[in-house]
Amino acid sequence: MKYFALAILLMFCTACAGIAQPSQSDRLLTKPSAYGMEETLNKLRTAIQEMGINLIAEVDHAKAAADKDLVLRPTHVLIFGNPLVGTNLMQADQRTGLDLPLRLLVWEDEQGQVYLSYRHPKDLQQDFKLGNQQAVLDKMGKVFERLAEVVRE
Image (cartoon, rainbow, N blue to C red; front, side, top):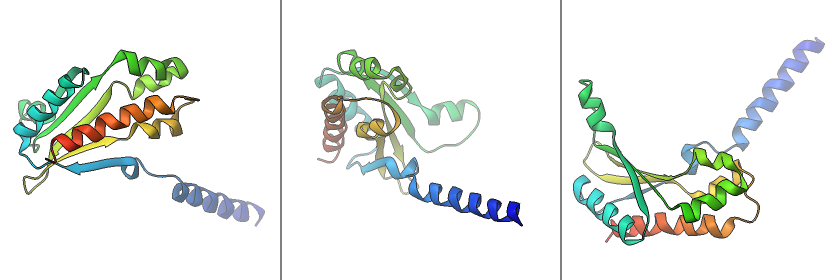
């Protein structure tokens, strides 16, 4: 009976912990684009360059899927950053390198609507010991806000 009660208590605590923690999808921001996929990507690439940020890589998941005879709606990841900004976070906690450089998912739904999805940089405070890096996180957040504005116009 003692073990049964302990097991019930453990299950209850586990369930409560799951409720209290935001899921990864709860921490993702998704914004619509007013443009199709190619125009959205072109506007984003240009905006990143105009902000003086390095576009490090672009991953075309749909092309990679097609290369293996699989079907996936248009899905791209833009990977971008600036060492003058991101290095500050990695100096505070090197593990932030898992989330840097920044990434922006650009994807198309079943109806052809294009969206941007990203994790707001302020959420890094929850995962890493960043101390007094709020100004850096705010600056990174403004980059995502500006990119969303560019394709909302």
